[in-house]
Image 1: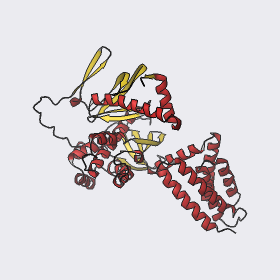
Image 2 (image 1 turned 135 degrees about the vertical axis):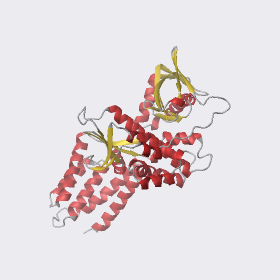
Image 3 (image 1 turned 90 degrees about the horizontal axis):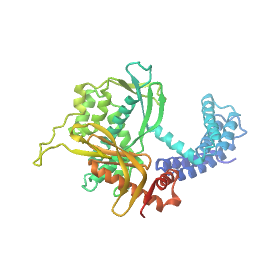
Image 4 (image 1 turned 90 degrees about the vertical axis):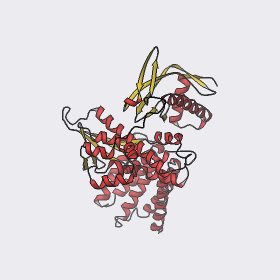
Length: 439
């Protein structure tokens, strides 16, 4: 008889290596290591296939082998292993887990899921384990328990902006070198600080938010140990400092005052305390199924808001005159002016008939509109058609930057056409179908 324990230990080691590859977003390596782990775990399980008295070891090994088979996209094999496990006398808890896994296997088979989709599912599940689960409920029941979409959008936008501010503040604290904290790097850091939803539920509104900071990249410092640790800890620290605390706690207020300056608190907390100050909905932290309320955030009072989002004194007017920044937005023969001094939030569309950089240009077959958002003194563009995310504190600059980024992306996609993934190929096809280039 083979040494089952030794084989099982090797399988577990390979499974841990596969998990590490998943953490590093190397899907190909994740699938390869998962398959190796599966083959070893199946070898160990088969040794006990007719030994029905070896419970719970027998069913545990078959459950593990089936899980690994599912992880690397071998759905038919996973189903066979589950049925083999159920032929014995698995303990109730293990039997429940086997039946739950069988449902996942049957779903994958019915959808003809590819192995790569299994890796993507594992990636989402990994992020879901790290997510914070938030429930938003209406305080009035005009629409029963349904939450008005504008309220959901308002809340999520504020959470996102708090995360961007938190990322910027923590980055500035960690890196003091002028080159590292250049305006360009700060814009990249903020642009890469995107929260993602890995689960949603309705009946009120529940959402699991998390961030994949691992994909954040700054070419000049991306591989330093400090930056790697910064990315690894970022969302967890944001959750502990911003999403989960009791803002009414004197202890938390004292800790926050000691940790952050007034300016830093304003950058981090202004957006989220605005959301928690709302009288239209209540916010709770829940378990992963959005069923059990772990804690409910009380409405933020004005006094508490002043602690976390203190008003900052405006600098004295300089010799050149007004502090107001005026931006003229033109569309056709019409124009309008926005004064950033007077705005907390605005969004508007900017038309592009063509895009130019120093050497190249493209012309759109029809006018293409880009939505620009102005919030907290920052202009941002998140264009989903061409997958461009940029920020700048100047309106003219962000207009030029979008054109430059679009041409840069087009050039890179053309050069790497043979190696593009499905999403990149879709962007390239859209560009080729809707624009004309001069190179």
